[in-house]
Image (cartoon, rainbow, N blue to C red; front, side, top):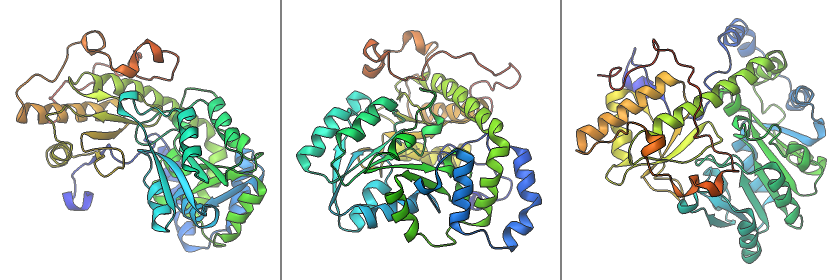
Length: 401
């Protein structure tokens, strides 16, 4: 898209769910200094890099298999561990439905309901799995694209309730962005269970999608079966370099998550100000929104790119979604101002009614899933002290003219 737009045109990316605060500029400087040796020489073999990652994360190396992105692991899980059928809630990450279908497996799709805010009821899901006689069950926590988070204790109960299945997969690609619990991951619980796998995506967490690296956690038998099938040099030198940098920059990584959590709250407030826009609570580094009925998701996406240099993710090609839904990545306040300005510009050019509330937290009707019944659930759409000063806050519609 940048190449098509031409040199000097800035594209603000609300599409790719990437950590905007990590790596730090100093880390990029370090990578730049070492770029010659990174590109010129072979990396270590995958088992050596995996052992280093396990040491950094405090994991037993026999419970870890590291690959060229979590999608590679999904592919191998499908080929080696899914024999007949797999259950998956939708909407979710597309490879969990597409990959098994491509190899002729039966995919049992459990539709999440908009009226419930796309929240997954694990008891109903287990009942669905039993009725369909699915042999593998998948759950994504945090789920993409809706950002719903399931408490750790509930995921553990889910794994135990399905201990007779061939496999239970918990995809935690976005769980580091959650601040609902201090220790949200069930990775340590999966490795002591006979049929559980936890997936992790380092590219999303570390803001380095281009490197393509992720890992899985499971008991040694499952992890070893996957690891034996992976190529000996399936990880590149840049991935190895970043693995070695992780332990030296742990504080910067934690700070990046804190900043992103702050931005998520702030962005939620700003999006709620657009009348008719439904903003779903999220524990990921993105928001799912439903556009007003008279808006077109495809037209809005194209308008934002053409007129405001903003790239967004319209969800019409996601199973269980329509083009009235968009997934918007959490970004810093200045970028969010630009996004909201662009959406208001679209509305005012093509529609006549007012689309901006003066105080949405007081005057806008609450959605069904935001009522008192959900007060004990993670919900980031709450008041949060702004970190923006008067100088760096862009007035509505002033930035893009």
